[in-house]
Image 1 (spheres, rainbow, N blue to C red):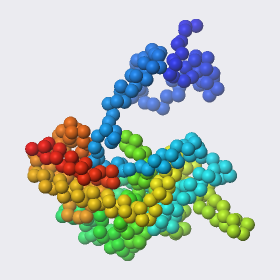
Image 2: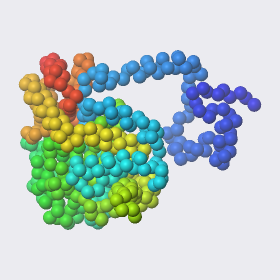
Image 3: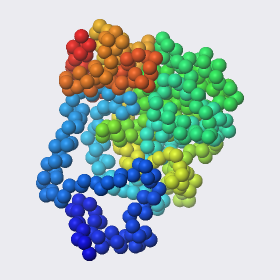
Length: 462
């Protein structure tokens, strides 16, 4: 038999082991495992894998590749749009790196009580933050949670239309359309061109008896604070529709919780709650609703709560079994959750417990102050309009470069030479706004950082 080398970095590459594995699963050849992959997208040649190499050489090679990445500790970043630079307390990393949390997989209702308690604390704090009664098991990200929310609304109301703001995050919008495919139509509501607020007149024209829900974001994807949440909720409820609010949790240190202005379902992104960015992740979606039997029964995720036991004064965990959720049909389900989201939910619980009610208010005030200082400082630069809309903003704001004669791409490329990562280019997402970028300023940005950003912009746009 021809000798087949065993690769030191490819597991189960011993020929005898491979043959036994194929035999055990009833397959003659590994190619049979890929019959579902269309021929037109299959690689028709062998991979040029490197020959077995000493580990020290491999390590040096990989590190040289990874060194091309630059983190926020090496350069100044003002990039937001769904994942933001925030300070992460050391305790968050300390707790989520503990083996009982980091390596734990989902146990059963009798063995996973420690993790259930941690997740119950997360659900309780999110419930307090958004003023909702019920919070589900965490989801993959805000977009996933928003898709769950609008699908819940369609199922509960039996209606087949969802109204969303035109300024919505493109990720949320596309996920909603996917989750509601063949179930409900997603229709946009215009915004006021002066202040970016949802156009109430357009909402009144489009809402009808077919509308299952009106979805709003507060703050919006473009960073401005939606001031008419209560009126929007009243309009929705007067037509028998639900109000869904998507929120950034730290903003709730200053803003009214959505439950106080009539929201029926709330979703949002928990990444600001003590979670590192990790090159675009990790993300953490949360989903909450009123204590309404119709809404609770439509939640596609597991639920954890506590209840009195037969012993007086004793409490125990009550766990909604996976069989009644989309988790039990993962191969067909649209939504996503898992062990990683549980880990980030525990991290968020640690973060929120460290802040407390007063801490989150102080942090929100600091973020808003920093962002408005940055807008004022950058507005002094000729050719740049900031912000595009005349509204109060939280953390994120828009920079328009039409007056500079340069594109956002050109400006961001030039900023990199100053070791600064500029805002997200939203020119294609919102072409009506011209050459516009979405920037964020958070608790990690000092006035010196903002000054460096402004000076670099001033030099770049000359």
